[in-house]
Amino acid sequence: MPAGVEAFGQTREVCTPSKEERHRFDEVKYTGRVLVAEDNPANQILIQAILDRMNIQSCIACDGALAVKMATEESFDLILMDIQMPNLNGYQATHMLKKKGVKAPIIALTAHAMEGDRQKCMDAGCDDYLSKPVNKGKLSELLGKYLKRLTEVDSLATQADAISKEAQQLGDLCQKAGSPQETDPAKPAEIPSDSPS
Image 1: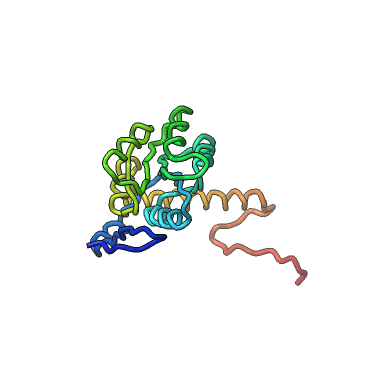
Image 2 (image 1 turned 90 degrees about the vertical axis):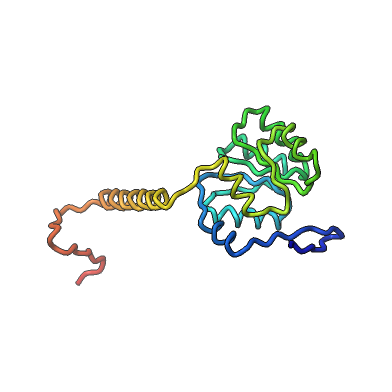
């Protein structure tokens, strides 16, 4: 049973995942880039840490106006939109993003979990809804609806591609440096010395 925590005069639930849930969560990886529109620094840190553990790149917008600016200037696969933010609230920001043609799915994040709140978010243009406090398992399920799951094979292929690109860059650097003499692959390479022997 979740325990209650007193914070600024309000009681909030704390969700503690079981050992099995933590293990299952640690194994799930996705590929994608997520904009986190959230004004609360503690929630920013928590959500970003969860996304990092799932291999998801994330950027933070600390208010609705910045979220609109970032989402229209950069490419995101998903937007997590807090509903209660300064400058533009999540409803207003979502409406503006949809009006501007942003195609990334928008998941509303709100501490309001009353009947009708979900529908209000959907009416504003959100594609889905997640109540706070953020539950890692529920967040992972929602991410699975919108982002590509990264399998172990995908992960290894991504690492192999990165190594291949790095090797190509090193080869290009070596070629740019140029060496007047031909090298024999059977002989160890000689390293030129800057100081006279």
